[in-house]
Image (cartoon, rainbow, N blue to C red; front, side, top):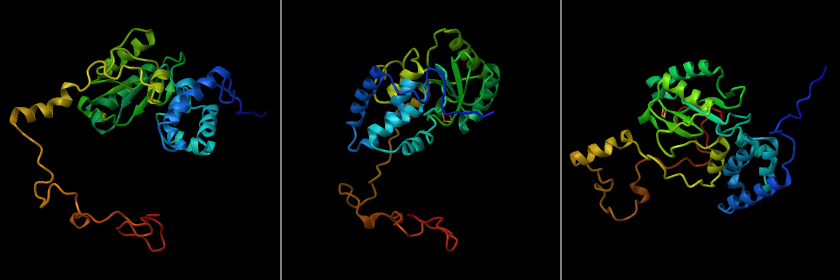
Length: 275
Ligand code: FES
């Protein structure tokens, strides 16, 4: 018996072309995205978010459309789409839930949250519940360490989490109960809507809700209380108002092509060579 995998059934088929109204809308949006860049190919990252906002993940037809409109090959598009974890090669849930397991969050309880939550929901990393509501992902540092351990849902933050709060959050999402992110807008958009915002089409909600939380502002408050100021970086320069001259730079100059980057390099090896 032979199996073929070149046609995927379902609403997000990899091979079916876009219907005409969808294709026209995508082309209109793509034109706007491409116009932001001097070269069309530079628009690839937002273009991938755009096709993901329609298909829910990166499909073959999405890859083909990006390649066609940007004048590059599908292989080049695929190379980028598979490099960045925000582009999904498989469908995710309506609510894509991230648990930060990077260093600070992990030691503050992120690892424990992940293992309890994954067991509670019954799915693993980059897997989706059978009802399609929730998918889970172990995520790396979200630059929100001051609120560790953090979680995200469709990239909105849920700060200072515990295993109990994490399980309640996902139960609420699955039951359709409203949940409120710790910062930013006071309700969640869908995964596809979030992808559209990342493609560069704002939903007008960027300034809603708390922006910087108290933990982020604590250093600034302390500095104001104690009268601290940042040292003047130019204080010890002879001519602080003039640009830095090359001879004033003490670091070695950037690597020149073909010259070793430095350190021990094995003879005949390309390792450590800047090409
Ligand atoms: S380690 Fe989790 S946000 Fe930085």
